[in-house]
Amino acid sequence: MSACRAALIVAGLAALAGPARAAEPSRDPGAFACKERDRTVATQWQPALRYFAEARPLASTERGQATQRGLSAYVIRINRDIYYLGPATQRWLYQRQCARLQNPELYGVTEAGDAPLNDVHERDIDCAAVRATAQQTGASLRMLVSSIESDMDRLSAERWSTVLPGPQRRLNLATCPGQP
Image (cartoon, rainbow, N blue to C red; front, side, top):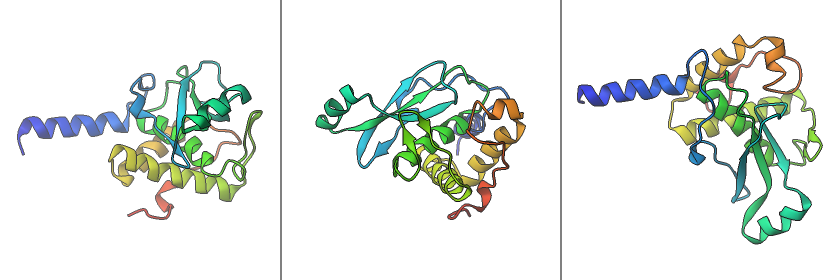
């Protein structure tokens, strides 16, 4: 392997792990991608959301048009103003919303906001999101888990409340099924 290629790989892995203070979310549409029942979910950038990423049903006037075009009746909105998370954590939070859309009735995706989840459902969503993020990015699960847990462990209770609903909790993604 050439020195140049090795340097690019190391730089790419470092970028995925994320700095202590990350840049704003990627503007690359492929960076945030979700399918719900084989239909593409729209991603919208929207300031003033409570959390970094939120899944919602489309407005009733838009649902029919979306489904006629083979698109999902849901949208995931991202708040670019919440920039203090690394890229891996941003993708993981996005994928948490995507995982909720796989069973929106069970996981409480409503127009009014996300319904609280019990501990089992939170864990299911956390684990599904880390697997999806690894698959989407090609990064190792160990590296992702380390990066995400590091970002989330650094959050104060006040900052946690802008990232995920509910009380601050310790993530233990290393024990998700399918981990090496």
